[in-house]
Length: 512
Image 1 (cartoon, helix red, strand yellow):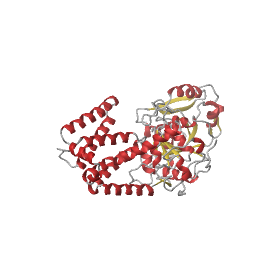
Image 2: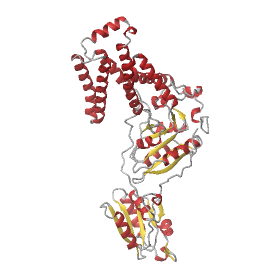
Image 3: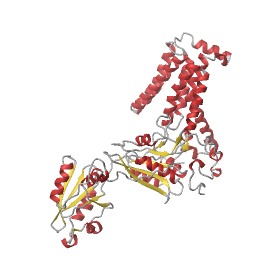
Image 4: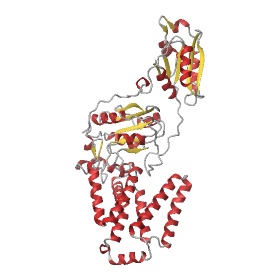
């Protein structure tokens, strides 16, 4: 199902491997090494060089760090105090030079310490918020974990609000996001693998999966695609999504983005893989199916009967959002005979005096609604909501009174817009909004036949698509009856004893 290509994890994990730099070792002479570092990064005003003596040994040392990226209290209280405390020269100096092991094991009290040899590896760590300890007589440099990242608190996700369920969401700090995954319960099989992406601006990226559930071929494929991301900077998980998708021409998203840890954990327990990028509050879940975008975490927090009815309502809303304007165009322009007589007379009366054909009328209103929606998103929240509501009412009422559009067209556009708001995921809602215009064009040219042809082409595209080897239309195609328990409806939890067959998991039975 998945290709088994070999991947070297952290392909650019060390600047020694970077195509832009060659290794530059230190000499062990502190003055020369510091001059080398100053030539590399000393021209930056936020870089600090702090020289001092190690204890009472008389040995020169220096700390190099970037203001704003480090915890100054940690440097002052746990690093400077420890390094300038009373210890003998004999303890530090050995026959082959300065003993870094003594400093690491008996002096320094920070949790993360590692040795590096080259200039560019040291500089890379300093830019990431670490502090470099350089000692006269040692060609190696100690990297101390002092990073202090500014981040917002744990808040409720704005893009995935629920009536019932957890009120926490990811933020921009990767360590916080990993902790949120761990806090969902003790699970020693939850595996976190670290990568480094970006060749000039380096960022941490992790993939998370349940080791005894996830298909190894799926994990290997995710690693391979992550390793093939070779760009200067990866600003957000949305950029990662575009590089790892199967079909970049398709309008449909091929990975699910989420700010909710509970949704991510739910995906992991089904055998999926999560991708989290430092600096982005959105996690990616792969592989995905189309039905996942219509489902909501709240479906699993409510009883199965109301949850199933609401899910069916969302599927209906997705169809209305995509095809309502095109059906209006086809019936009004080509198939008036299919409309009941009284309704047809009423529609004809409301359209009296409208100068445009139905498809131009629909395009004018749909474009106006899309502009209003976009304007509401970009404006400040209080103003944006007012613009969206008042703007829609004013424009619709004015257009009807001016005779540009008919009242029935305003009703159709309003139902379409409201239906699109019922779709839980913004990304698939955006895809359906684009497809709505394609369906309208098909209806304007061929009428109802064009709408049917467009629907068949859309179904054909969805059936052929795959996300990391899993059919995008699953479980409808390929037909997997057992997976229908959590497809159009959500069956009671006691009946969903097995994980989705489409995932080919190691452990197909859910633990009880």
